[in-house]
Length: 595
Image (cartoon, rainbow, N blue to C red; front, side, top):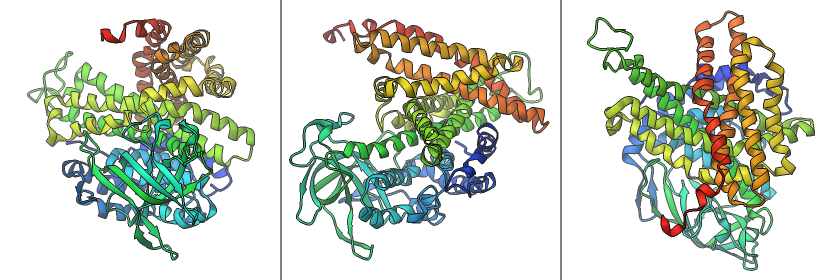
């Protein structure tokens, strides 16, 4: 069976030794976020994940959500688990104390997201989407809307969704047809159909707050004519309790490849009452708050899937007896050796291990950057942190989910034929992981966002921030002989990023297809380099741990895994650089009718 144990030791290592999370307590508003407090929170979350959420993962997949006459029921045990989740305060961890939240840093939220999604991705999506709605409303909603809805989203008695996609449009939101007619009382009557709405209908909360993109009657075409509206399932009464049913209903639930315990709904709006969030025709700006948070959240799903895949593969590889070691029996008293002795099995495990550990460090660094961007007293530091977040968001969303899917497949491969059997639970990881590469913008869209928006953003300043962070590290450590084996490959990979970016600068203006053809390769090139940067930071921390003489096996494992990454994974940047410079003609020359 698939197994999961919250990786608390690795999380604490990254927080305390790689990133120095103690600096959070020096930021205004985060004074209580000490390392000891964060550790206690992680320990409690681990108990919830291991004892409540993970045991429901497979049964939730087997049962799925049921739909009848517009009513959706989540699988057995989900309502009880959600009540425990809500009563434990987990929906409120990073929310503003003004609305009943605990006011903890985003860094804490990122660490929790990994554990929640690793233990039960379909379950974690319900509160995850609610928090995205909370973020959008808290930044763009009126004081009246905030006062009415944020406390309920914070304490988890109400949940939230984002309603973007329609049958005729997914990524191209400029094609949205849903209409919003102004009403005399200041509300709007909203009519249209939305599809693929995660958690659009369920039985976990007493109300569901939908954030809906729609067009006003006089709206200009395209994305410049989209407004954002808050559409509750039930209209709240003056005292805050739920009132009459609104004109938004679930018309169907999708029958899906994975995440079957999360209801993916068709939502029909028939004159539903909605209230504008933000300004008219400025809905995309407000929704992007939620989408950016969701993209990082989906990236964390990729990491979570990778972690449970790795743990499940390791557990099987240690127990499964098959063949003999190429260098002689290692289990002389038994009929065969455990498959973990075989080099190709080790290769698969090391790919997973080298990804999850660096990805965790990169994700938690972004959490720290988010906290700096929000709370640092120095405006320049806030701006610098935000630049890095903008650059890393598409990288985390796309690379983490690509690798989450790859790690899930490697887990099945490690299990062999037994991995293909449903009863063993690892094939579910493949099915659940696949959606992460699709929703919140396919990974191809993330690559186009990186190349078309993020690289040229602010005259290239944001890109230079990221490359400058890496080059600054290289400059600071390249003279250290003990770091040479790690810093030199990083420096060469950084050079390939710069070379590829220069190629695009010279060619994409003449032919935009050059950027499109190179986008996915460039994102992966930058992602692999960013991961190498994090491995170098991990190595610095591990060397300090070794010099202190504590837990040498733990720190030596970090160095060994870093060596694997540098020797076996990072060289992919060479071929990616060549692929980018091969140009668009290799992709675009074949006529469409020849396919």
